[in-house]
Length: 272
Image 1: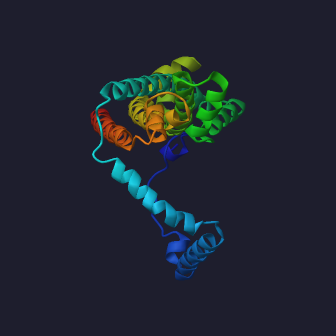
Image 2: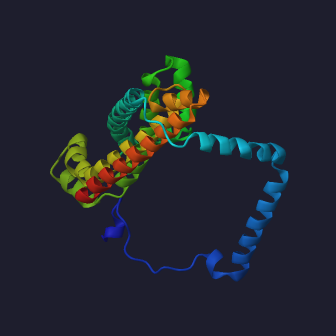
Image 3: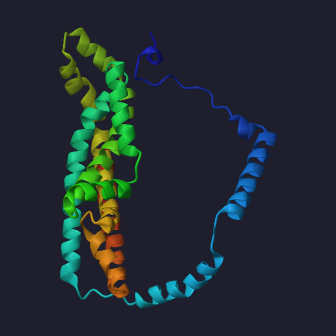
């Protein structure tokens, strides 16, 4: 038996061949022609209100003009909003990653029966089907305004993303370790703990760091619809035409995301 015959492993190296749309000039130019035709059709049929767009340009200039220089005078309000966003993002990441592990196992076709596989895949597909803002609107309607709606929203979002990638990682594990555990008479859960999970652990830690980074960004977005965090503060600032304070919030969001990107990148390098 070769490695390519073992379930859950990659086949041996294969010779790369040009895809048909690259190898054939007729297909390549035909594809470009279809793209150009579609762009022309889309711009010609979509209801763009060019008069309103022209009227909005001076308004946009006033907004940007009113935002400079940014005002950091209300530092307490900024700190409160970001503290809540951090709490929402960290709690949602912890809950989402913990819940994504069993769903990832259920969605990996090489370690579970087909009925369980279809159930796990269905849960992940549903979790990934809607934008976090739509899910936030539903949870705000269900549990009211505040951080609980944000935590539930980002937990669902985390399950969909982390669960899908972990399931794919489980499907690509070295099956030899599983066969070795089976040969010793180990049970199903022992095989998961000692043969499957150790192989996906580095990937899981890296995905968890990335998801925390993603949830920090998303917490600002879902807050706009009332799911807590700095997004609500930002929306209130725009609603009061307090553009200098709104731009201060935006700058802080950018700075926080940059720091978060640097930390998560450093952690991923140490893991890999």
